[in-house]
Image 1: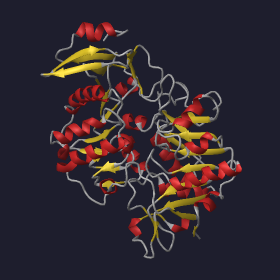
Image 2: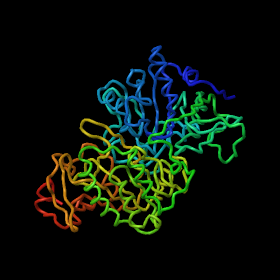
Image 3: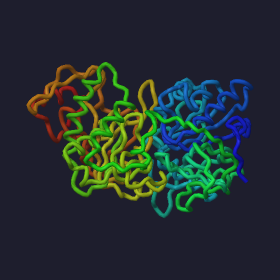
Image 4: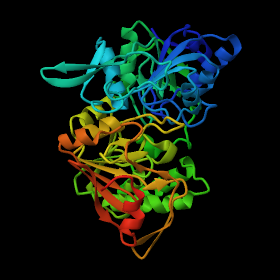
Length: 505
């Protein structure tokens, strides 16, 4: 039977060495009151210690003084398994310094392992990951030499290759909802996402663990059965936090309290961009580059396509679709669960403006893995001569793969949106012509990527159409690797493209 208790009493249930599974998507759905209470307990008592954290999507908000980063900095956590690391600066620093064990696996795969764990399975089999960094034959999913766990095995079943992924065994589930009713049932009416709440609660109870839910309010009325996300029979403790923190403030357009027609998308996307997007001193230069790239990428859209848009430059494809009046003719989805509407920008990524439906994350990835997407628009850190893309690992930082591997696994058409180089790149766009004012000092198109997030070879064998859109040209994936497809007006093909590459296109 569930109890309504204080946040401190709830986190007192956590023991040394426990695995805490967090039901969040980067900034969203994070139970901040629970994180804060755990931080305060550790700060005061030094316990619990040697904690392990599992989170399919990642649990940070780009601020090491918020959420789990706070107690990770204290040295209370010895292991992290997550799909995305970019929003967790303290975690990344400690992982790259070898101070904690850290592992990165595809977000969609981790989401599916939660559901498999709820069903009592020790392994989850998937074709996602074959040929990229998490394939044991290719590279490693460990962030440092200290991380030696075997979380992935290669297995052939009836002549077909699969990767077997270990399922999590959570001792504690951290879940955030909106309302608890008299039976302990949890509804999510003001939440932007469901993530994997039900499966995570089931997996935790199956492992003999405790499910702790943070809510905003207590209702004396019973919830309608279809509105319940986590039933009370799975809930051990409820913590009421009347002022749950929201990045950028609560927005009813993201929860579905109001529906946003396509004619009003520009207003909401601009409002959210002001609140949740950080723009540095080179913001205008980056905006010009992003605008050129996304404007060309938008030409790949066709009526009735089902789409996924990634974070960063690909986000602006949605803006162009809105301003060009074609948003009403396409169907945009977000891996976090949103269907319809338009993905929220910047730190709000994962939420959806004016969604038609918000489903569980694992359900969305079922659709993606099965080839349900017609086209996706994604970014990249590096591209090599074979069409391979690195999107998760830089020289001195680790962003994590996120949903990238699942999204690109079976999508019919893939559009990578990235600048030709970076750090100092400046361009001008006038009268339909692009001119390079100065090139960046860091190449993005290289002979060999430093890590493989996307395999050009496997994509070509699967019959996927792949193009790479930059601010000066478009490349396409062929049997022999990368080939130059288009050169934009104003660009000198030899000077601005071919002579700057270390390989032939």
